[in-house]
Length: 114
Image 1 (tube, rainbow, N blue to C red):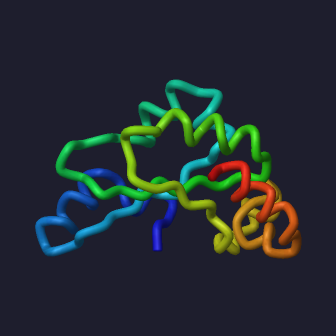
Image 2: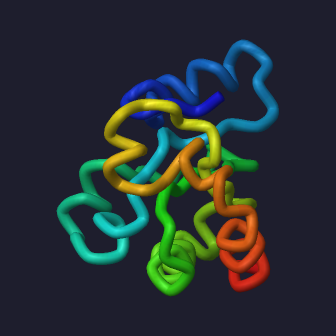
C-alpha cells in the first residue's frame, strides 16, 4: 500500500526493474497539492517509465480533490482516495480511515471524481 514518504519515484522505478507492473505515489494531501506549486514539485514526479501509475490523495472535500486530480491528469492512470490511513494526523485532518464513518461523503467524492 502507498505510504507517506515511502514510494517516491526512485523507489517506484526500482520496483519496476524488479517486475512491478503498477506503482502508486505516496499519499498526497489534496489541499496542499491543489494550492501549492512547491508541494507539487516536492512530492510528485512524473516519468515516462513509471506507467501505469496510481496517484493517491487524501482529503475530504470533493472540490479540492477534483482540483488536485485535474493537476495530474495525463500524468497518471488512476486516482485513489485514501480511506485507510489510521494515523492521528488523519483524524485531525479528517481523511484516511476516518472517512469510513461517513460513507455518504466517500460516495459523494467518488461520484464527483468519476
